[in-house]
Length: 76
Picture 1 (cartoon, rainbow, N blue to C red):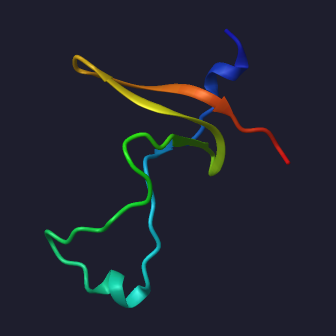
Picture 2 (picture 1 turned 180 degrees about the horizontal axis):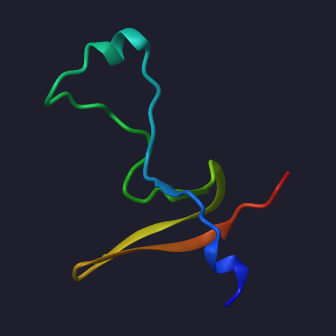
C-alpha cells in the first residue's frame, strides 16, 4: 500500500455564503432565515484544507449525492 492512502485532508463543499454583522448574527434565533449569495445555477466551491481547489455542481441522483468538478482552480 502507498503511504498516500493514510493522509487525512479536510474537504468541504461551500454551497453559498453571506456576511453578517455581529449584531445581526446575535439576533438570529430558531427559524431565522439568512439569505445566501448565488442561485441554483451558481457553481459550488470545493475547499481542501481551507483552500478552494475546484468549482462544480452538486448532483443528487436517487439517494446519492455527488460533486461534479467543472473547473480546477490554479494558483495565482
